[in-house]
Length: 241
Ligand code: ADP
Ligand code: MG
Image (cartoon, rainbow, N blue to C red; front, side):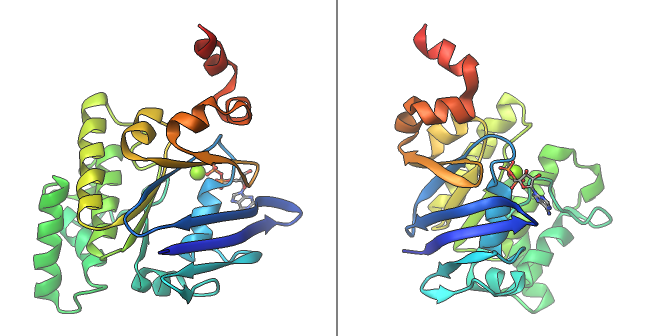
């Protein structure tokens, strides 16, 4: 098991955004995480990546307890994550942004640049383009590139494929596949069912901070509790047609 999150909870005052969630991910998997807005998916990712301290629970990565470790320690251990609202350095070029990630494993500037160039190529970005000239899809891709350059073993993607045109979406799916083929284990939060259906064999469904269902994508979309919580009435209507 690469990642084991046990009974993770995160409370803001009296409100439990994550209310005791388990997630075990094997090396080499792509696991989907779906659920309605406000279900706690991003907060759960924050806990897994060390960006917030869980109120209770444990997070084990490759056997090491990272529950109380810093975001830097998580990155160094090999957990990389993107943010739902991408974080890029807009005054810098694409290449310089990706170098920020590359420095984690390549402390020497030339090595970092070399490595970053390979990642930029892989992700289909243009090295000399200023980050600020990218639209949201480009920034999301750039963030993936920066995180990838930091050499994660586990990549947590938080709606990184949202807001793309159909053509961009196919390219992004292909990119996630390539990253997976490089040996990176992936947990992906995504609302677009096509992405989940195409990329994952196992999905967890979050609702109100808890995992309410898990199984193959085909199984969970037929689950009554999931239809109720996540897909809503429109989906149920569609299903009975
Ligand atoms: P999701 O990613 O599934 O849409 P989030 O994890 O972003 O859900 O949010 C889960 C719930 O926690 C939401 O109701 C949100 O408003 C709340 N929440 C998230 N972050 C904070 C915070 N820093 N302080 C208070 N409430 C928060
Ligand atoms: Mg979210």
